[in-house]
Image 1 (cartoon, rainbow, N blue to C red):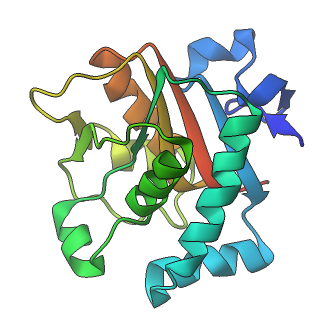
Image 2 (cartoon, rainbow, N blue to C red; image 1 turned 90 degrees about the vertical axis):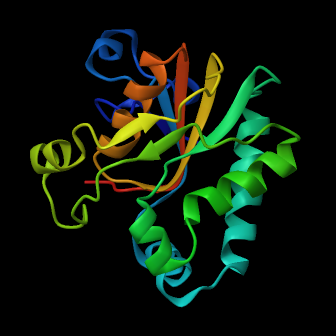
Length: 190
């Protein structure tokens, strides 16, 4: 099992960033199960657009096994990347939230949505790194009156450039989190 730094893409210990990369991101690391290509990409698209929810159960078991392998203890709370209210109404579900809740259930951990997406952004598909950052700039806020725990596992379906997870981690850390690790089904490997 090989894990890589969320910043530089080189191999890293247990999914955490290299010390020299930590000042370049708000994420403390990233763990993923698959490369975002082939059948995995198709299965993720089937969840989003063809409502194939059984796939979420399989992915959640795999990701839960990763958390067990890396020994994330009870001090970690599971959360997820929110989507805009309008996008949620269009789709009817947030695949990251479904995944996070199933992982939390398997791990016997708390799962809570600490963030709210306040700006409806353009789709990130096809955008380069800088355009992705601009698209998501100030798109997330912490929900009012929520206690943000110190250690958060932030779940999403795909890590492309890391912009979404990084923006969410920034808000979480501005509101009390000390460590935020991204957990995704897949990562785009360039």
